[in-house]
Image 1 (tube, rainbow, N blue to C red):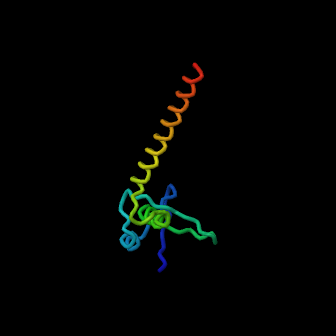
Image 2: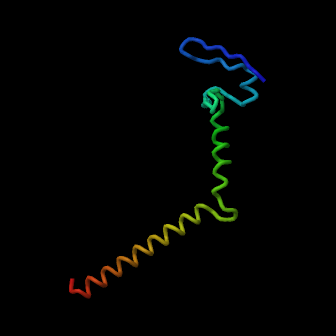
Image 3: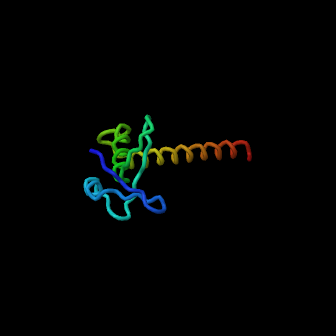
Length: 98
């Protein structure tokens, strides 16, 4: 489907009401103008872009594993490692009379 839009003073674009309804565009919404490989301009809502990014990121998630729990476990492991290194350093410093 093709729609016509008018550019008014200040570079403002008037988006046809039918297209606004179809895309769920409301006053105050952020719109994204994206240029594709062929130089075409694609109009997307901010919500559409967020959904696209979420879909793209799904490939990096592992089913049944919480990213938050995984991050917490990683941070605990790093803290334990640092603590062990500190104890080892202190033990060596005391041994040398340090």
